[in-house]
Image (cartoon, rainbow, N blue to C red; front, side):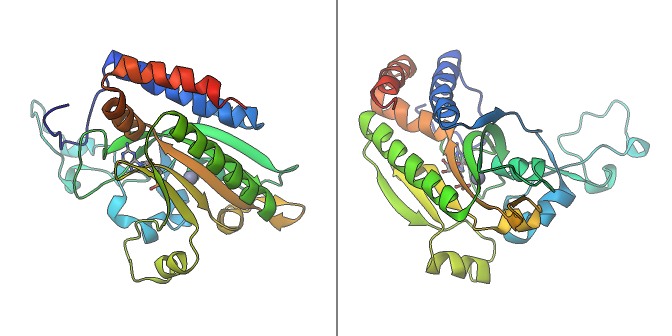
Length: 274
Ligand code: 5GP
Ligand code: ZN
């Protein structure tokens, strides 16, 4: 990792993959210990659904969509480096930028029997102005633990996991700060961005100037947009999100090698298992 890679596309070595899996199984178990259902969501989401969640309103600059080829425009034998828009059919599927969108869409139209927690490992995709090593990628793994239910329940979820993350990062000997943050809205002067600055609904754990985990409350926005209810009222939601390649980046820097970092995570898992 001596030269800086700016492609945004990175394979993980076998040793780095072992660290990612070890770390992810710790985070997944935090969720399942708290009663979360561990699920697998689809890799793509309908553009129509993401639009309903205001994704293209708030984050059009991050959006990536998927198009089939227009076979009528195919040039046999060509080895294109890209496809022009007129060689493509309309894009009705989008790459998710966060793992929790699919969780709200999965529960669309349902009345929940009670407070509900779900954990998922998603591959998330974001168009960015620039990419750097494992710190900023076009596509990365995001583990999320998502709470759906009453206002009190979703707040307790963040309090519980906020404390747990702080203990874990401290035990891993990674200096960190926890700070209020805002989502990277396209319209930074818009109402949604302004509201977030006035009343923070996002906190990040920052290690080495890198946000490696975030705590997010959405009030009852997803409950309303996806028509998910509890006792006749739209649910509140919150999520805890971990960008796994970023954890790999800071752990590798701190411990000097993938095996040493993996060992540290394995040992620490025991220390904070409560
Ligand atoms: P958020 O939705 O809060 O922007 O992202 C959730 C988490 O995903 C962040 O706290 C961060 O850990 C991670 N994340 C965001 N962007 C990237 C990225 O470009 N690469 C990686 N590896 N992780 C990211
Ligand atoms: Zn989320």
